[in-house]
Picture 1: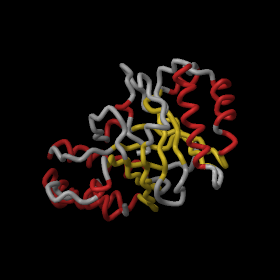
Picture 2 (picture 1 turned 90 degrees about the vertical axis):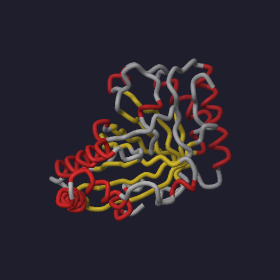
Picture 3 (picture 1 turned 120 degrees about the vertical axis):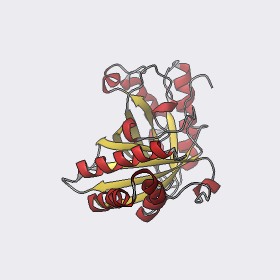
Picture 4 (picture 1 turned 30 degrees about the vertical axis):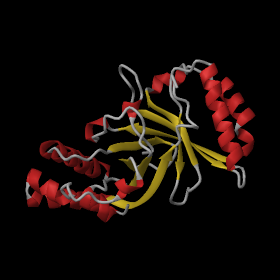
Length: 254
């Protein structure tokens, strides 16, 4: 989705959001690995991921381990593996020791992986409107915003006003914001738009367009100001589609 689509409807995850993690006080950290299988080894990689999920079940791991596949963009064919809803302190005492986890990964998956990139994202609940679904949707549209240096405050204030507008108008669109905390350039913000089917990528005629929603909430002048702040603070943006793979994920109780 290009920016004009985001600004005309806010388009609507990496990533289903912290609401899918059953904790009393879930954290906001999404710890993700971007794993690119070696050429010609996708079948072996996926078989290894299933073995890894079975191993987590044997270990009585209390936390889910989600797996998505990137379907479009420069990283097409890369798998995203990780946990959501974490506190930073959780990594000091993981339910499965890191050493044992790495050993099992190397045993059943590692031989089929060309590269692994770890990134940590911080969920932004104060500006997000997540769905109440307990599981990730089949697809998610991922819009990555590269914010200009020194423009982070402008960008955050603009998306904060967007959130206020959605609440004021009861706009029926679910979305989640994340900020890259570690593992890449600073000033990276990710918008996750859930899609339950390919048909969900179509514009919804019964949903008020983004600009009209802002105008209803604040009037034309403020709506234009919000859009201008987003446009002026963003250096570039990229879009991807990811697909959730429950058969490759570890889901406690399944």
